Image (tube, rainbow, N blue to C red; front, side, top):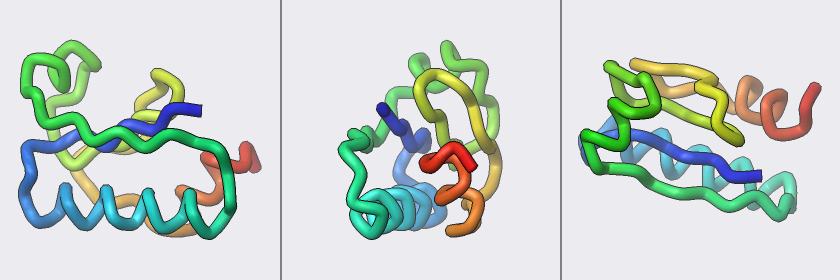
Length: 78
């Protein structure tokens, strides 16, 4: 599983990346977390508002920090 946190590096983007990494560690998964700051790549993924979370190519949320429960559900497939 590849989880991308998209954002230019603003405080909310950093908070989203920290939360995603913490949830991945807590669940003890083998997911790879990538931080994407390149605006052309973010736009190529169809995201116009950050922070955003993309899991295995599917945009899960944009323009906000996801909740821990949302992340757990997306990662575990619940």
